[in-house]
Length: 415
Image 1 (cartoon, one colour):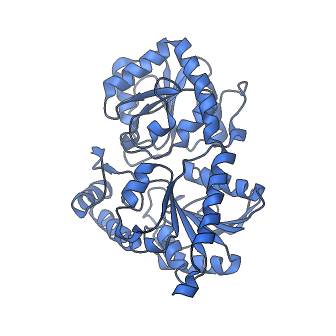
Image 2 (tube, one colour):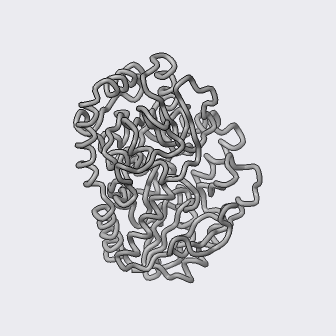
Image 3 (cartoon, helix red, strand yellow):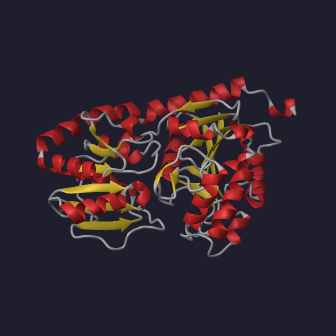
């Protein structure tokens, strides 16, 4: 099978989506499929070329000319609409590689849908977040509460509050344009049911099949127990580890409040990418690092007492829950979104209400003081993590490709 994977970014750019697509590409190659990747050109990797045995097309859209428009110049996000420059380059890639399936991830989706409009190729889209329904991609209304779905009355003020008037209104308008292209998708894969629920509310997705397949982990990236501690964690002693975007919607401010008010007897280590509201005033006992290599993140998981993900928004299927589990560490997670799909409360970790700092603090203190229970949860977590292994999940994705090819009429024949 010839497969073109398309994503907003790709390694060496760091992030959960980037790692997911890179692992998927290598896994598909290992199964004998012909795989190429199309992604955004970035300052650190501007040109086409081989990336760990996978040929990567680096696309330059019109939005790349908007200097200063991006919070991080190394992550020039594509707009959530069919941007003409990206559409043109994607058409060229599709014509050159002639894929049986284009599998798209992220805000590249509307551009892919437009590029494939008059091409006889199947389009599968994985929803890793709520980005085709929510301009913030979080379903976190005005940074206050979980949102149950889009409407102009909610989305416009929320976008303006988050991005400012000009950028917020522009992105909201572009997202509405992009949504109209979603009928070109042949099948959606949602990594959590909450994403299928909210995206299926969009008019253009009516009649498009949705399937729920969680994220996966590659067991080979889990380091042995004897791996050295990375420099980003304490040289000795207990620490609690958070990995993810360093923003309020991920519960970072709630964690800081616990360390500020209750002073747990362990250091808190925050590893991730910056957000507009990333805190700069850290209480005693907290350290923060950005853009940490994934190997160091995995080593940090191996040595932590436990990991914590107190998200306030409907977190989809976070690999930062699966990775510590695979390393034999329990996770304290918020009872929201897809997190309860991954954590068995009291068996592989602990679930707490997503907006209760007292409960979060209690769970942290309890696991720090009850080492035997913490170790027991970690052992069960490692056993459960096998269910989310790469081989099992990739096999399900390939099955989606094949069924999409078999069950979708040829586009050029019906238009």
